[in-house]
Amino acid sequence: MLHIDGSMGSTGRGQRLHIWERRKRLCGYLLALTFAPLPSAADEGFFVGKQPAAVRAAWNSVYAFVCEGRGGRYVASAFLVGKRENGKRADFYFITAGHAVDDCRQPNRYLTADINQPRFESDGITRAPRPARLGDVRPVQVDDAYDIAVVKVTAPTRTPIGAPLQIGHNCNDALRKEIYAIGFPGVTQRKSLKGMSETKRWSRGKFVGLGRAEFRGAPYTYIASTVDSLPGSSGGPVIDEKGNLIGVIAKGAAAPENGFRYDVDPKNPGDWQTFLVPCQAALRILQQSGLSSAG
Image (cartoon, rainbow, N blue to C red):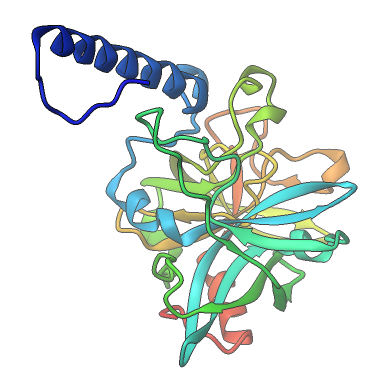
């Protein structure tokens, strides 16, 4: 084994050190290729790096809601909306998808900062820290109309979580403007993305307009957007360029099996991609939970 102390005692030793460093860099490069996500045009709208300022600011506030057991697991998205401190402990409140809470029959449900993280940092040598995990997830309020829910976890006050997202009072301020979604899209469920790992990602699109959608036999007003989504994105936040929450991902493409029907034209790809729960509905469930948008 070669011991490296940073000195260059002889020409031979300097050459050996130089070769060792080259091998180490090459090894790190190959490991990085093996374990790190590779952004490319094949991402089809789902990204990890090159985040806009608003996405970067909200990134650490978005978690995965995981329901896990021997029968497998499913993942939805969640985001922090409130925090109540009580000495060294605090209650953290998240909004997530209502069906993720209602349908979870597995013994383990938890929130985690990320899933399927690489084993190593980008240098290919340093082991990456395990993502934070918050257990004992408790439902607080479920909005059956819009399929969103508030859940609570209790953890040490100094748990490293981003700030609660601010919910806009007027979603229409973002009409026809660029918006960003953050969450945990199940990219392996799309044929062209099967080689990619499941992890936290962001996507961009536009607030197209308002549309009426029927869900569970009743019509509701949703935000029609061009942000991409996949199973696992449900419950994730959609923010504007200022970082204000303007909607929550509800459903993607309408289909007979999910009982979703849109008033917009599903054959026009520029008309819609994903429907969002409007910010007003998110504010309402916070009020019903005894919380404020400011957390």
